[in-house]
Length: 370
Image (cartoon, rainbow, N blue to C red):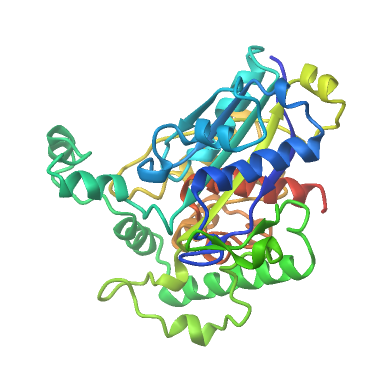
């Protein structure tokens, strides 16, 4: 089978809710990433076969195929097509899967996989909330309700269930949250994110701050004054619960992308690869506990690839909530020192549809020693 190579990986620095990126239209922000991939790789724009973009809340400014809208806002020619993917929090990771599969199938040579979410402007769950408000029903059908005995599908409840199932205390979750900030602080100060971050003008309330003189280059969610005492003082999200806002991922604005090419694409572009796509795996799991799937998915991937967890040098496990990576470490007997070495969503933010490729950019540059 043909190989798929990554030759470019970029992202915006994360923006807090109603923060430094909140004035950006999502399509325009995603266009910044597309243009940076083209410029940094020296790619002739006409060589791009497709743009595949992850986006969770496909409503309002993020509706009607935002991948195509982002292309129209970018420097790509109008002949380049685009399609938008929704696999919820794994949307841009799935965009990367589809890009790699297109290249490995031999049908395409140069594909951009990206993701965008401006959660300040398109709130989480907006599509479902608008549907309910307008009496358009729920995505959970009667048969699904019956199958799961009318249980609630909630990430917050799922995170609490994982914490209880794997006997993870509030203190352990708080300590992990602090570690996420500490690692992100260390990575920021060491300049590990500098190569992957695309500087963009600060945009608040639709107005460019200082006419582009002030650029957003620092992840806004990293708390440089984070302390265990401060994290421990945050109230639990539910009575008697262990999860707090401090041990959960942040609402975040951002965009990210990678360029995936074939061997022919490498020759067309005249570039050297940053990484090779070694294996692709995705797995569903119980929608009630919801967030446990990374454990069986990793086991399946290792089995298919003929590897053990000890063969993996670095792990990226999404910090949607602290119990997820902690349960993953516990079940797989993985080395905590290799996990999210530059921090994760608790500190860097979690811009839903952009998360998968955002993690990929960090992982690629960590492997490259940048």
